[in-house]
Image (spheres, each protein chain N blue to C red):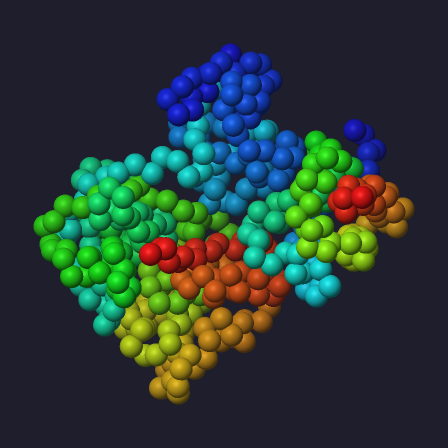
Length: 323
Length: 122
């Protein structure tokens, strides 16, 4: 007999009983549909304890690495502590180590979390202004390369958190952040696979982390980063990325501006169009998409239609907070 | 399970290969893709995989009532026989593309066809 812990309560799991059946039998409402390990409606996450591999069949590699599993096909062999995908965000104090403008509207915020902080480049955190006000920001840093965690915070007009970060935050201040969240990050394996990364605005942050993470662990396939902005003012980290492209021949960086003529070394046009024109066939490629939700959703569809497999497409739309 | 339709078609590996091809055909088809706009593509792909698994004679626990409930909002938006026919066509074309023998395609099509009344809320 194994024990399943959920939300601080523990339940006996009978022999050959799935996590889904055990929890629902005890009155815990877990959404489910096919009950055959396919539709992923009953997705949960193991916070401790190992889940059997057959309960992770068909999941994206990033979800497998984060111990997600399908509760309908999980018959646990050991005690496990489980949660719904959105739970367990926690709150961790962090010290502001530095603030550095990247362009006229985006600030790099460097934070030192108090105590251990695990993350994968490309994940995001929630940044709290107070108990009821938080916003999500992606991590641009790589844990093995950067001492601090780094966020790229774009100042939104009247944004309650971004304006506060830009105008009121000072080095030395203590703030609260969540643990790292999200499944948009690099997973080793398939080192020859082509990686296409498309971002707009501060959507460059997670992609900057993912690219450096992939290069660091020795990804050998082509890595193509496209960063789009309306005008030249919105681009940033241009020199750093050009240097990275000189250091790693398999990495190429294409900055794009969608309004007006682009100067030499920059492409003009919508970033998604520029990328798909360069790489029209994406069969076998892994795709990362971050930033403007309209771009991300269009890109998800277009890259899939261009041949990328659904399980190879990772997307992080920056959905604006409701005022 | 030996010699079942699901095994003959190629089991889970066949469904994995089929779902991307099938979903791509559906999204590219202007007569039906309006029903798929604005939905989360990952969730949708997983549901289509579950549906194809069932059509291929694989494991599932869907009842007619599930099918009815799951499509009621689409029926309210005008989902009808012509759309169902289009989807049937895409299933057949997907399996043909994967070089599945014609008699097995016919069996899978018959399973998919058996959901028509429930899907269309008749």
